[in-house]
Image (cartoon, rainbow, N blue to C red; front, side, top):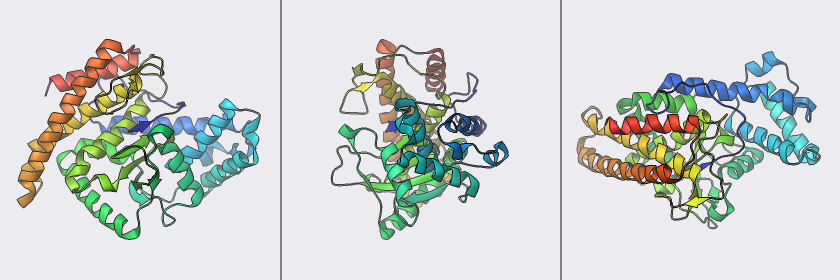
Length: 344
């Protein structure tokens, strides 16, 4: 699942770099997104003087996902309600963001967390929950894992990440470049949607994973590729639309029971194709993974996911071919995607 918002950043990536995994392309996307975030502080500083921060200080800052969320809170307020943007609540958020810049980044590399006081304070938790869960009619009602659940889920996920590093080194390089926080959650009693994971451009660098939807370590293999590929596509398309269809136009979606806008189907097409290619690579390298008695089970699972993802790609592509009004960028990305699938 992917949530989007008004994008303020983008990346200069040439055609041909849009589908096949490339850590260098991911690094370029990540750098551009972060550079544009920093450069937009001058604009926000017109409403929030505390964000008029020296460029040399900003240049050393690596925003965390929740800090991106705070930025989008403020940017949305300025965009939609310029007079109300300077409320006490928003001024406090701006000061919090400024304090984060001056404090610097404490996390190094990709870390695994959950929505608890052990990892975040209340403001960050609220920010993460809001930006991950933007559709009230499809609410995931994200909750934290308790310490035992978190320890178990982390161990299972780390086994999957080790497999991705061995069998999918280019995917792993992209993952660790684009992802700073993997956040475990589970659905609350008010959840209206069964979900495996979530991503949002407004929480750049984060993905949420539902621990209850993954019984075995191999269940995380397609899910991790799926979610971070949403983020990669967000970054690629951050300065340009992928399609120009009216968001109110809804079409059948192979991956959802409900109808979806074309943009959502475009994302589903892209990530389904990437799942397919990732499963191809894992199946080709099963012998390198030291799976022992699990080898047959993992092979059967990856084969089933490969077939399911390929079918989803073709279903989505058929909807796009019939209904999508693609931009030049959207066409270039989808052309690269189709070429990679055809070359399998």
